Amino acid sequence: MNALDLDGKRVLIRADFNVPLADGKITSARRIEAALSTVRGAAEAGGRVMVLSHLGRPEEGRFDAAFSLAPVAAFLSRALGREVKLCAGYLDAPPQLDPGEVVLLENVRFNRGEKANDPQLARQYAALCDVFVMDAFATAHRAQASTHGVAQYAPAACAGPLLLAELEALSRALDTPKRPLVAIVGGAKVSGKLAALESLLQQVDQLIPGGGIANTFLNAAGHAVGKSLYEAGRVSAAGRMLRQAEARGRPIPLPDDVVVAPELSAEAPASVKTLDQIGAGDRILDIGPATVARYVRLIENAGSVVWNGPVGAFELPPFGTGTEALGRAIARSSAFSVVGGGDTVAAVERYGLAAHMSCITTGGGAFLAVLEGGKLPAVQVLEARAGGR
Image 1 (cartoon, helix red, strand yellow):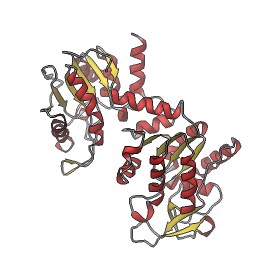
Image 2 (tube, one colour):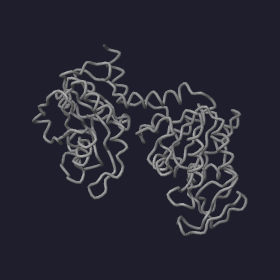
Image 3 (cartoon, one colour):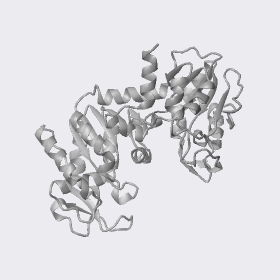
């Protein structure tokens, strides 16, 4: 975007303002704040700026006040120091703007055909603008009308600064990393991140599984996990990855000790146990101090770190020690770090570490898609158009 002349042009920016709401109030504005410089830059360049986004999962083709972008328009007005009107009915009556003016277009998911990437709807979006700016990394893995289709039909289409920065950070971490490259992949289930784990295994120097994913690997390694969360159907896949990593001389590090409790509760009595001490009634809910120390050393020696998913049930104080310790190790490390995923970002923000991470990506599903080695449709269409110029 910054390479184009936007003066007097109608600029349509696809941002990601899918923020959490409670009682109609924004509870985390991180995604809006990340996009402010793009919106401000387009307006200051003389663009007639229209911003598109989705919010939540309303029934497509039907207005629902609970998913209106009105709270986002109010936030933008305060943040930009200028009125940002919310515009509904823009497909039938496109907004008429002065240079430097900004409007927010109502939730794209109120438009029938959005998720199906309907060509007619995509052409309607494209007719609104002279320049389409894709700046929503978090939606780049979806081929939808406001992310992919519009980029095919708009007079000009380009990447926004935020999208470009996130893609460059991921490329730096995964394509041309300073080594050793350490990846921490936590979460509840192997199945949701199996493709990412298998892809990363080929790229990284050290792959650290956490949470329920680590429990499945522990079971694959022959350890009893009591009544811990794990996936019996993915034990064979985890075992295969353990053997592959061993054969490459880069064994997957598994916990030596863990924090267990009879149930997931802040009041539950928690204790540290070695793997051979885990009983039938124990639930593994965090990594233990010896494991923390070992993983911290890996991070301290890393040149690059990619982190997706906590290593324990950090939401409850007895089980957040491991996630906090690894987060703090990354924060004080000189390694280039990319952090993403809703729970991971929540942990980073809880412990006040955000300012010390090299890149906190706005994408959850898109970040995972990149870790899987997949292509992002909304980026591919921009590359195709750039190649055809």
